[in-house]
Amino acid sequence: MKANSNIKYLALYLPQYHPIPENDEWWEKGFTEWTNVAKAKPLFKGHYQPILPADLGFYDLRVPEIQEEQAKLAKTYGIDGFIYYQYWFGNKKMLLEKPAERMLANKNVDIPFCFCWANETWKGIWHGLKESSILIEQKYPGKQDYSDYFDYLLPFFLDERYIKIDNKPVFCLYKIKDIPDLDLFLDFFNELAQKNGFSGIYFISVGYPDLDIVKKDKRINGIIGADTFSQIRYNYDPFFSNNTLRNYELRIKRKMGYTSEIVHRKKPLIIDYERTIKELNIKINNPKLIPCVIPNWDNSARSGQKSLIIHNSNPALWEKHLDEMVTELKKHPENPPFIVIKSWNEWAEGNYLEPDRKFGRQWLEAVRNVKNKYND
Image (cartoon, rainbow, N blue to C red; front, side):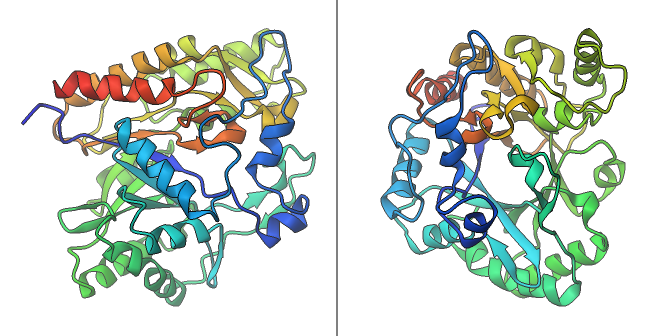
């Protein structure tokens, strides 16, 4: 077996591309991510906006053929599975659940998948509003709610396409530190999984700065490296030891005239992609770490002048970034065998692999090139 032949390339998947009553109420009738994408404008000379889809167009995830085409496209270019963001707000309240439900019922969507519980309160400011008002609050009602949540997830866990390791369904937790009764949640989900024929749950945490307890907790099997957006936008210290990216942001802020670490920007924060991936200087320093890599980032379609723009990204530099991370992961066979790509289709954040009108399929071709390089 080749040294990295068991490494799986998983891409985060946003199920936002269909109207829901809540978005109709909060934004406008028929709102989806495409609403912001289509109205985006360049904010400076050389700014690549609007970023528009190519092969799949402005799709609607209510159409089954779209998910079939996504699966076919992803598998053709070396993506081994999707990590669907899953929104359970407590008391059986969900949003954007229909695409995953339709995928479950449609065996023609023949790509492996797992879930990431995006346990986070939604706020209007994320979409460029001046107010940070709460749209819908993430709640944790307790054990019965966790039981209801598990019952909802069980048909997905039982599906042959659901990603499992050692008979454990893979389940990612976006904000593990926000779960107030974490011990109860982890133990109860493991218990319910075992009662249903599994060996437990393969929990993966998304990386945040205060994860010492997660590193030591045997119930947590992996930690996805903190993504670049979180590291820069919210001033989190990176999960990585050298702290270089945060220091780089502070240097940029000083040049812009800011004296405080808390910045309410009137202009976008612009950082060069090549410089960014150099500053990250990611080294695997924990046996649970799962590298998280980004091909691009520009959320100005959502946030306008408050946005973060990682400028000058292109498929060649993306291929270099991905290649370096695979090389690093190959040095650590004890680590979980995943590379997480952020993301498959977060178009309003300028963070995607799907074909666009400027580069076509080159983002995907870069993935295939790297994968083939290590599988030869």
